[in-house]
Length: 209
Image (cartoon, rainbow, N blue to C red):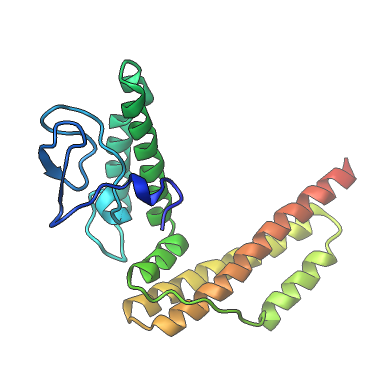
């Protein structure tokens, strides 16, 4: 699920509790520090919601997410670990990586929707033929002669993304997993098109200069 740490670095858990790697005292599965000896704990295999201290819900309170992230990130400030050993500094660095991954996933609706499908064990692999609308947008991009035309294509794609995310969330709330997966495939295509627009715009800006 995560590309932050290897599975061999996770510590086994049971009933939401685990033990400090140093003093072996029991502590919460999501604890960043041992409450007994104060050592930084290794990254554990928990979901992004748990890592950020949030309820596991498709609809995330944006303000609460920001507060939780900032508080946890502050506690992992590298300056706090300058005099710690190599092991603890390594744990702190990986904790920051895991925290950032969780935050970036949950704050973006598209990423959160895909992650929600994965949590439910409903994510499917699938391809879909590009829609006629996307085909028209690609033709428009190929014909673009200046950055402004690229911007117009990007704006249209952005509107499609926003509409698609609304439909995705609706399908997920209704547990219509097949529809949610199909929408994700379409959104991936639109997202890829936005990358193409950025590349084309840079090319045209280079030509003009």
